[in-house]
Image (cartoon, rainbow, N blue to C red; front, side, top):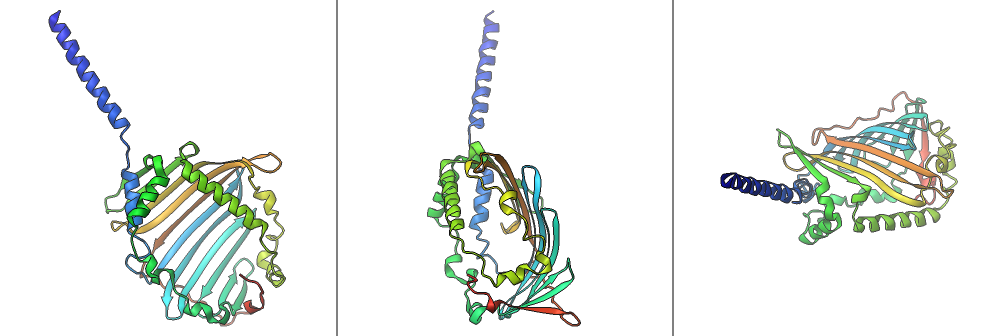
Length: 323
């Protein structure tokens, strides 16, 4: 009987230790994913090794109450030039069932070529850089204020804002040294500081919309182009209801992939919000997007060839109050 009691005591002690260990680990914050996220931020994407060219791919969708409102995707190639950037871009989108395809080309001077691939129309926009102001502008990454890593104070502020959300970050390490960092956040997890920032941003957005000026009359000509026919008749207020009551962020997913040097390779995100409009009708809006960067220092933008094409001229200098 005594031997049995000894085994019970040993077994009980082992069970207690096991339970204590499991409990301790269960309540130990797992911040590996958040730490990886901060390391990527500290790598300072803007001040890392300079790149002179790159290719960017992206897609974006908006769904309201289960119905697709917008689906868009595009590819942009950009390279530095002495007088600015050389850019070429192809894009496709479907807005409330109306599909459009287009291309943009810029060689760094004051004109931009636009191609309406849906209707096979070609345009040249001239005088886009009023008084040549853009030729002498300072690029963000040439400003010394961008050429630094995150300060300790900024790191402390980030930690405070994120709060308990550190546990919502995870990281997957890959064989080539790259890693994928994921933040998966539900409405109940969003801390108070972020809620306050969201409320402030929403209030500011409403104020700005109330003070938005009407579109200058010169833009009416652009709205009459075949590319915009049908689009300008869409009732955006009806398709994208303004959520003024019981607004809540239901779910947020952000995912970043960085290489072995913590340089950003791709990003994707999902956002689901809910709320009621002025009439008290409940709505759910889902937004998804993704993008990636490739061809760093190995990209050559496409060049537009105007030869043999009928090109309509649009003079941007006649557009007043462009902002």
